[in-house]
Picture 1: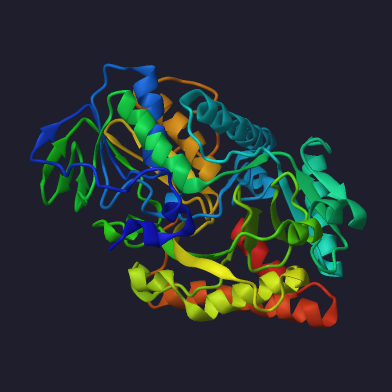
Picture 2: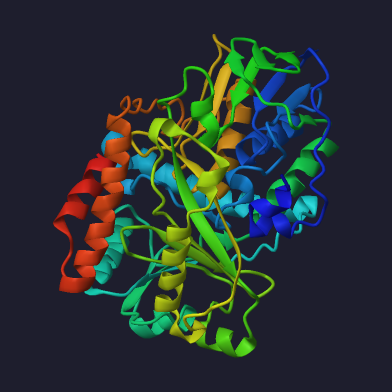
Length: 458
C-alpha cells in the first residue's frame, strides 16, 4: 500500500511517507499515546511543552496522518457538533458560551503554532461562508444567527448575508443568502499533521509507526511488538476506536468521502469566487463541504456513504463510486461553470467518529491512568487542538479554564448493539436524504428532518 494514494492531501505532502521505526520491544514511559493523528500529536505537543522532562511515546498503527487527520476537508473551524442551545440545556448557558469562546480561541491557537513551528500547511484564515439556496435553507440561516445573538455572539462572530453578499464570497447557483463566520481557517490537513509530528519529535517525543495497539489497559498499551508501560495511557483513536477491545459500541465510524478537481483556470475561479480561500458549504441536511486549495483546485466532500454493519472499518469502504458520482453532480449543480465533465484528479474517503449523543468529549481518570478524547463528528481539525491542550492540563493535574469546560469527562451513551445500530444510523441518513429531496421539490422545510435534528441535539 502506498500512503500517498490515500488522499489528495497525502499525495502532496512535502516529505516522503517513510514509516518511522516500529516499537522494538517492551518500553517504559511517563505517558503513552495511542494514535498519531491530530488528537494524539496535539496532546504530545502540549505535554512536552509544559514539561520537557516527560517521557512521551506515541504508537501508530500505520503512519502519522493515516486516518482522518490526513484525509479531511481541511477546515480548522470553531464548529461544535452540538448546538449552543443543546449545550445550554445540558450544562447551562454560561458553560455553552465558554465552550464556543474556547473554540474561537482554538482556531487562533492553531494558527499561532503553525507560524511558530514553521509548518507549511497552506494556512488561510479566511472564514466560512454557509450558503442558503432555498427558502427552507434561508430560514435555517436566520435561525442560526438568531441563536448566536441569544447567546451574546454578534455579527463579528456570525453575520447574516444577503444574496449579493453571499454570492460575492461564493457564487454558487441559486444563492438566496447565507451566513459568514471569520472563525475558520483553510488548511492542507496532511501537511499540518505531518508538520506536527516533526514538531513533537523536536521536543523529544518518540513516535513508533506500524505499531498497532491491540489492547489498552491500566498502565500499559499492548502491541504485537511489545508493551509500553506508563502511568498514563491516552486513547486518541477516533473512528478507529471500535477496533479496540471493549470499545465496539463507544463510537460509530461513519464514512465521509471527497474529491479534488484538477487545478482550475483563472477564468473559472473568476466565476466561482472564494478569493480569500474561504471554506464553504450550504444548509442542506446531508452535509457537504469544500475549499479552494492553494494550488487552485476545488476539494469537495460530503457524507452519504452508508454505515457498515458491526462498525467495520475497511480500506474498500474509502471508495464508493455511487457517492463520488453524487459529489460530482452536486459540485456541478453548485457551480455550472465547471461543466458536467469537470476533471477530477483524486477521490478518497475515510471514517470519522460519531458518538451516540453527537457530543465530543475529553477526559482523564487519574485513578485508572486512562485518558481519551474524540467523537468530533467530522469537526476535529480544530477541536482536536482544544482536546490536546485540555488533556495536557488534566494529565498534569492543573485546574484551568480548559479543564472546567462542559465537555470534560462527559460520557456519551453507548451505541445500541447490532442490528439496531446499523438500522438506526442508516435510517437517519435516509431521513436526511429524503428531506433534502422533499425541500427541493416543495420549497417547504422537512418536519421529519427537524424532528430528527432535535432528537440528536436533546
